[in-house]
Amino acid sequence: MGPIHGQELADRILVGYWHNWAYPNAPRLIDLPVEFDVVNVAFAVPSTPLGADLEFHPTPAIYPNSMDFLADVQSLQASGRKVLISIGGGADPIQIQNAADEALFVASLLNIVQTWGFDGVDIDLEGSSLELEPGDVDFRNPITPRIVHFIQGMQAVMAQLPVETLLSAAPETAFVQGGYGSYGGVWGAYLPVLDALRDELDYVHVQHYNSGTMFGRDGQIYTPGTADFHVAMAESLLAGFDVAGGGFFPPFRSDQVAIGLPASPLAAGSGYTPPATVTLALDYLYLGSSFGGQYQLANPNGYPGFRGLMTWSINWDMWNGEEFASEYDRYLRQLFLAGDVANLSVTTGGVLNLQVKAGAGNAGRAYVLVGSASGTDPGLQLPGGSVTLPLNRDAFMELSYWQAGLPTFPGFQGTLDGQGQAMAQFHLPPVGSHWAGRVLHFAYGLSQPWDFASQPVALVLDP
Image (tube, rainbow, N blue to C red; front, side):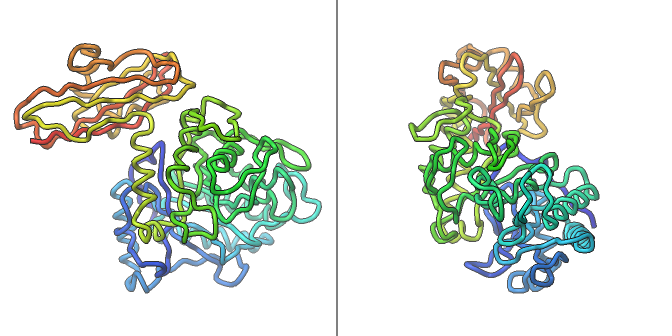
């Protein structure tokens, strides 16, 4: 059977890995926190050590009946989430040394994706899977067989799957940013892969854990577990960097870049960072709001299209009280538009205060804030066609647009201040009880040109 696809992938996402083994716990896929937009199933592995012929079987410790696994995959997809198969992992290197290996790799991976209906593939090659041989000095023209054949193999796999099939990668820092200081062996060994597959890759989330200190693109050294480290490592992919020995690794689009974090201190050997520190880094990356650290963004306005966060792993997050899911879902939900209440009574009415935050790079721009009483999907395509406002057009949207600035909708249109911010309010009058239980959503877009839209904010109408 072919892949069963849910809704389109969100602009900003949380990605997490699920263990296909019963440690440190054994949740089924349907038991995972709903905050994760993408679940990476770990792992498809070689049938023989260092082989190229991949296999995947749901562990009987969690799924005695493998058809229950398939049903759970389809259940997550029906709810709009994506489920990817991750290949490799730290304990099972994959080596594709020649054309015969490449053919085995392609056939086996296609079989796994199509058998279980996965939405895509996550590349998690570690250890000796990718290692530059002596004389392989140009990431744009690799000659190491196991790198060349892996690239060709992945290109062949993606060419035979539906165009909406997702592709992600989770390299370690040494394999990517490590190429700044040294290019050889494992240092920079992922760069040829990322460069060759950049048009197929939906996003890359480098593992910001189990890492030593690393050079940023500014030539300074940064320590894992700090806000500076997360910003510096992320911008290496967002702005590109010089590769040791020659050449400039071009930047990815901002929506192709996320960062990988351990879910708890026990989830990785090192690199766990408390959410309060991570959000300092995210505010800088998304909005250009500096926390006064050592690293200075090459683009001081930030990258509003930055894709989000990945964690190793969902299992460890559940073990840790779901800190990752709750903290970062809350952060992303309030990133560009934040409301101070989630519920108002239709009996008494009330006020929803809305903070517009578009980042310093959008200072002085005109914004239009509107509401909808009919949901967020599929949304409204803004003029120009490049951005979709996550609200459905209805009578409430028309009302909020034409009455912007009047007592019910003060601040719903205006100009952003020098920090790219503004304040607005929705004044809910007492209305009939038939409105109880409805959900209103609010979002804004920036005009001239219409190239930016916030995430939606929900308001539940209580009795």
